[in-house]
Amino acid sequence: MSDNNKTSRFIPVIIAVSIVVGILIGTFYANHFSGNRLSIINTSSNKLNDLLRIIDDKYVDSVSMGDLVEKAMPQILAELDPHSMYISAKDVEASNADLKGHFSGIGVSFTIQKDTICINSVIQGGPSEKVGLMPGDRIIAVDDSAFVGKVVTNENAMKKLKGEKGSVVKLGIYRPGVKETLDFTVVRGDIPVESVDTYYMLTDKIGYIKINKFAETTYAEVMIGIATLQQQGSEGLVIDLRGNTGGYLGSAVNIINEFLPRNSLIVYTEGRKSPREEFRSDGRGTNQKTPIVLLTDEISASASEIFSGAIQDNDRGLIIGRRTFGKGLVQQPIDFRDGSSMRLTVARYYTPSGRCIQKPYVRGEGAEYEYDIVNRFNHGEFFSEDSIKQNTEEVYHTSLGRTVYGGGGIMPDIFVPQDTTGYTSYYMTCVNRGVYIEFGFQYTDKNRQKLEEFKDQASLVAYLKRQNLVDKFARFAETRGIKRRNLMIRKSYPLLEKLVIGSVVNYALDFGDYVQYINESDPTVAKAVEVLEKGESFPKAPQTEEKSE
Image 1 (cartoon, rainbow, N blue to C red):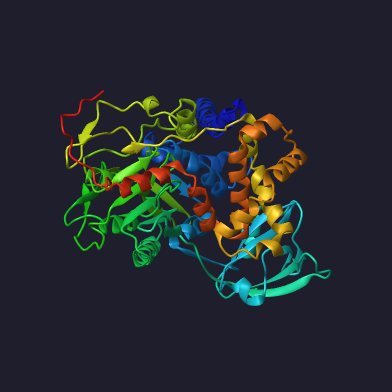
Image 2 (cartoon, helix red, strand yellow; image 1 turned 90 degrees about the vertical axis):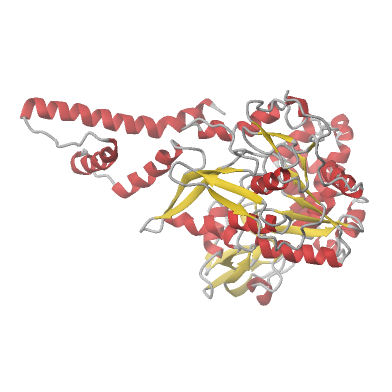
C-alpha cells in the first residue's frame, strides 16, 4: 500500500479531530470572555448529535449536514469491524441486485473499449435480442444524446442502461460493416442474474457445479443442475466454491440440507445481543448418500465457508483446494427512512464443531485486513501447505474425531497448491495488466463471423489452437507497452495459450464454456475426480489419536 493511500485513509479522522478540537477551543474562549455557556452533554451517546448541532449552528461557512453525515457514516462503521458498512440510498438497489437474482435492464453484457460500449453478448429472450441487437454492436447514443468519450464509465453506463421494468430507452448503434447509425427502442425488462455459472459432466459418472454466490435463486438453480446431471448419469458431485464470496445464509443452508441426514447441525450464530441460534438439517434432503467434494480457495468466504465447515465437521465429504478467506461475522440489514441502509455486525458464525470462521482483525484497520490475502501470497501459503500455521490453541474435532483448527477460515482436507510452473515476469505482467482480456475481446470482435461457426467449447478450442494465438497476443501486448521476451514466452507458452484461448472462449461463447475449458487442466479439479473415482470422498475416523503440531 502506498504512503499516499495510507495518508488519505486518515484524512477523515484528522478532519473530525480538528473540528472537535476547534469546537473545544472556541467554547473555552466563548465561556471565558463572554460568560456564555454551551449546554453540551458529556456522554458518548449524545456527543455526535451535539457535534453536528454545533457545526450547523456556529460553523463559519454553510455546511450541508446531509453530506457531512453521509461521509461520516462509513467512517464510523469502519471503526467497528471490516464488514459493518453503510450503503447510500443511490447504491442500495445495485448492492442488492446480484443477490436478488434479477435486475431490470436491456439484457446485454458489455465491455468498454476506447471509450465506447461494446456489446459482448445478448441475453437469449431478453429485451435487446427481441429488437435485434447483436454481439459486436457499439452503443454510441442513448436517448438521442451521444454517449461516447470519457463520460463512458461502467457506473455511467449502468445508470443509462438499467431502469424500471417497462421503461423505454432509445439506443444509437454502430454496427461494424454498416455505414449508417442504427436506431433501436428497447423496453427494459427483468434480467436474471444467475448464481450458478455452469454445470456439466466431468466424466461419465461425476458431475460438476460451479456456484459464484448464494442468492435468492441459488437453491433452485443448484437443484436443477443436480437433477440434470443425475439424468446424465452423475453418481458423484464436485461443487466448486472457489471465488464465491458468500451471500444469503438461508440459501446456503437450504443447499447444505440436501446432503445431510436429519438433525445434523449446519451452523450456529451467537453475539453479545444475539442468543445462540442453530440451523439443523430436516432430513428431507434428496442427496444424503451422494458422494461430494467441495473446492475452495482464499476468496471463498462467508456462506461458502459455512457450506465447507458443515460438510467437513459432519464428515460428509472432503474439502479440496486452499484455505478459505475467514469471514465469519453476521450482518443485520437496517434500513433508514431516506432509503439508505446499514449492514451492522451482530453475531459470529460457528461451524458444527464450534470453530469460529472469522479470522482475527484489528478494529479500524480495514485496509490491512483486506491486505491479508496479499500477505498470504507473499508468505507462500498459496504454494506450500507447510507455510500455513494452524492455531494449535483452537483445536476442535469433527463428528468422527478428526482434528480441525479454529482461528479463521476453513483449511481443506486435501491441499492443492497454486501451480506456478511456467511463471515468468512477462507472464505475470500480462496477467496483472489484464492485456489478455482486451486481446480476447478484439480478436473475437474481428473474427466474429468465423467464430460463430463453433457452437461448443471443444470445437472452438481445437480451432483456436491452430491459430498461433500466443504470437498474435505477444505482438498485441507490445502495442500496449509490454516488451516482447521470447525466452520467457517460450517458458510460459502453455500458460499464455491457456490465458488467451480462455479469453476468446469467454467472449465468443460464454463464461460457462470458459470454466469448462479452464477445468480441463486444473489440478484441483483433477484431484477431486481422483478422490471420487477411488470412492474416498467420505472421510474415515482416525486410526490413532492425532497429535497437534
